[in-house]
Every structure is written in structure tokens, then in C-alpha cells.
Image 1: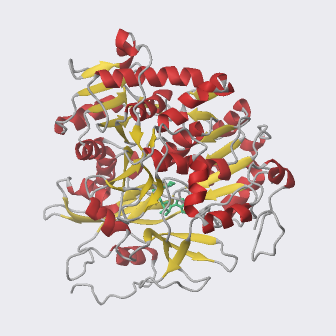
Image 2: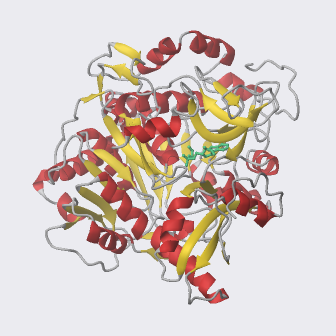
Image 3: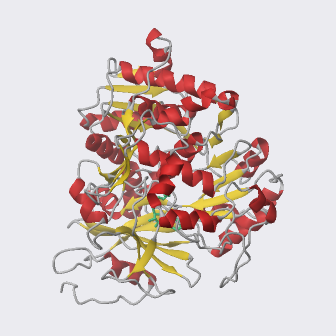
Length: 633
Ligand code: WT7
């Protein structure tokens, strides 16, 4: 497709000439053709741009599919490639990380040299607590530089990090620490959110009452408010930094390409969250190459990804991808509209951000405040924009394109998942765009739209989105549950990876994602499972049974609605509804607070006892309820 002015169906935005001229990628067609023809050759070429302690013997081993292996026999460490290798180049003194506090009162910057020093220090301290290769470390922090150091430090010594989003609360944290059997938790005294204090350390204390594997807790001081410290178990990070063991270089562990790098919990269709496992080798190559081509990242850029490190977007494109590319990363502690709706636009201007990657929900939220806020600021440093997390509605796309990008900056609408590790369906800066479509699969990838039986549906029809070729940054398994890995992703359509999304493809081969077809709810782009919300509700004494569903919401994309059947002796009331909303927020975290709790006499169920959320969803929206033949009497 490249920059050629091909005739495309629908509303099309062609890339500006200067973007095409500057792009590292000149000919999408040629590279796409090469990658289709020689998948392994394409990925080997990308891998060769990074440093391997020992080269791989085989690029792809599919002999035990779906347990694919990539760069088999290779020895590598992602942290070495993200940090150490840049010290041998001019990037040693280049800014790696610029951070600004939510209140704007402090700013911290780190060159690659300084980043290396910080990572070594953190790695020395983690190691001194008896944590080594293969041990799990839970990281539960706000958006501050130390979360980046902690992730890279774990990678450096071969420990497996499990970052839990700071917006989750006790139950969610406890479940994740317990399942991962972490030895160490790294947290902070607290975090700021819209000027309010979130007491992370106290939430950790609560969670650790039921987590016997945790031996130590490292606490980074961010807010300075009083927190209880348990002697022997809890250690202030700044105290540890003052010890001699914190100093000096910490050796980088030589990892097998297939050794685990991290686990990240995400919600699936049923049951408790799954720990998605990613590896040092393949994940490294995938995040490196996708960011290079899609955001065309180079040494002049200042890249800002607004995601939290607690989600995959933060892992891949706030931490690993940009540092692997030697980029300058901007990280902001706060959210989009605090204290005023121009906070982000002000930061773009102040720091000269060139690439800005965010979520549709944030764009929709900021749109509501009007154009006057962004128009106060000089946004001319921007050259590329991006979105991720949920489908972007064309109105929001056009607003972003016109008001923020001034019709000069192509928007990379990147479709991918926690499981894919890196972009899968995505534009590059040289391809024509259609608002609301992520265009086509990344190099080497093949996506199909299939029906219930797995047969391809005609272009234009809706169906299930599947991926038919392996890729380096694919999840390797669900930690401790390989059977669930196979059944969840590879059983419905043997040989094909089931994404859980529905989509359609138009006659130009462009993909349009419609949304999840399982019990995943996307609230402001955050992935939540109905099961986790329901199990929080059930811990309330008044609740007999409940069902959570997602309904369309103008800003959040989807919002959570809960249907609750009360126990005998409890009567529905507005107060009780409010209490239940708070209950979920307290246990799961504020992001899971239901929009509304509705009381129901009896939940619609199948004869086998499964709650029919689809029926609740249809009823709530006044839509036809569909096939009810399986509904119990
Ligand atoms: C689900 C994965 C990996 C990025 C953060 C989300 C939805 C993601 C898009 C997009 C339409 C999107 C899908 C997917 N999604 N990006 N550009 N357009 N939908 O990762 O939390 O694992 O969620 O997010 O439904 O399956 P995640």
C-alpha cells in the first residue's frame, strides 16, 4: 500500500509528504512482502539489531505448538539491551527519562548513564534480599521513576516481575501476590491521584495478611505521609540505598531467550485473572521492532505514552520498547485533567513531545472541555499520534487529528493485547488511514475473521478475529496453568490464536475492531473481568448472587452495571446500591466501581446454571433478547 495514492473505500487520510520522507520505513509493501514470504527471516533481521550474549540456533521452534519458542538457544537480557548497550554509544549522555510530578512541583531527569546507575542500585538491593533468577517480585507503585527502575532491575537479575496496577485495591492485589508466590513486594508509601493520596503501603499491609510467601517489602518514599513499617519485613528504599551493598555494578544475568521476563495478570472470560507470561528474547524483539516501525522512533524524539506501567501498554511502550530503541521517554505522574483540562497539552508544549500515544477514552474525555484548552498551547512539536485500548469512534479520531495533530500528524490506532505483547494490527506512518480502523496486520502477521465454526466470513461481515501465524512477543503460557493457555486461546479454532474480539474486514483489507465477545469489560480502556467484580460483590453480607455486564458509555467506552439478587431479609434501596458500589471500589479498586447497581429478583440463567449476561445486556439496552431456548424456567 505504501504512500501510493491508491483508491480506497470510505473516508481516507493520506500521510503528509514530510512524514513519508522522514520515516525510517520507506516501503511498507516491500517489507510486508518479505515478512509474509519469510517470517523467520524478517524477525531474525530485527533480532540482529540487538545484542545477544550468544546467538540463537533456531529462530522459531513450532514443534510443540501452541507452545512456540523463539530464538531458541539464544542468550540475552532485555535490560542489557534497554540500558547497558546505549552506554557504549553517544546515547550515554542522552536523556532516557523525563518525569514530572502530578502537582508540577518536581521534575526529575535521567540520562541513560543515570538510568543505568539507578537500575544497578535497585538490582543490588533486590538481590540483597535473596531474590534471584526465576523468583517473582510484585511491584505495586504509582507512576514514579522508581517503578521503571524496579522493572528493569528485576529483568537485569533474571527475577520475574509482576506489576499490579496502583488503581487496584486489596483483594485484587492479594490474589495476584498469592498466585505469583512473590518473595518480595516493591511499593511506595503512597501515590497521588487528582490531588488525593492513595495509601498504597496500607493496601499492601492489608493484602499481606494472607500472603505467606512474601519475605520483604521495599517502600519508596513518595508522599512522605506516615506509614507503619513492620520491622524485619519492611525496608525504606532510601535507607537501603545508603548501604554499601547498593553501590557498584550488579552483574547482568545471561538469560535464555525463552526464560520468563514478567507475568502480568489480566482478566479472561471466566474465573480469576490469568498470569500472562512473556519472555526475554521474543518480547524484546517484538516491542523493539514494532515501536521502531510504527512510531518511527528516532534520537530526536520525545515519546510520551500516557499508560500506566501496571498495564501491558506501559510495559511495552512506556518502558521496554522505547528504551530498547534508545528513545527519550516522558512519564507523567498524573492524569489528563488535573488540576485543569489543559494539563496534558501544557506538558506537550513544555517538554516538546514529538510522539503522543494515549487512549480513546482520554480523548473523548478531553474533547468535552472544548478546543479552547488545547488551543492555548503550542503543540507544533508533535509529529505522530497514537491510540490504544479500545475502538476509537471516528468523531474522537477526527478531533484528535484536527485539534491536537493540526492535520499534520498521522494517528497510529494500534490493536493488540496483553497476550500479544506488541502491536498486531496497526498502521505505520506511511499508510493511508481510515478513522476507526487499525488498518492491517503488522509485518508477517495474518489475521482472519471467522464464524463460529472457524470458516472465514466474507469481507464486510462481522466475525471472530483470529491470528494464524506465531510472533515473537506472543504470550508463552499462562503461568502455572498451561492447560488453560491451550483451552483459552488455541482450542476453539485449532492452530489459530483466538483473540476474544469480534471484527470485520473491509474490501481494502482494513480491519475494524468491534469489541470483546467474552466476559471482559473495557472500562476506560482498562480490562476488567466480570468474575472478579462479582466475587467482590459476593463478599458483601446482603448479596446472594450477582452479575456484572458492560454497557456503552460516552466517555469510558463501557461502564460496569451490576445486577444483584439479595439474600432474604435484605431489601433493595438506593443506599444499599450505593454501599455495594463502594464495596466493589474498596475491594477491587476505584476503576472497578460500578456505574450502577440494580436489584433483580432472579438472574437469567441457563439450565446448567450459567448466568446469561447477554440477556441482561440486551434487556438493559431495550434490545431483542435473542435465542432464549437455553434459559431455565
Ligand atoms: C483488548 C486487549 C494492548 C493494549 C491495551 C489493551 C481492545 C486494544 C484496541 C484498538 C480496538 C482495541 C481489544 C483487545 N483493544 N487496542 N486499537 N482498537 N480495540 O490490552 O488490556 O489486554 O486488552 O483491548 O478488545 O482484545 P488489554
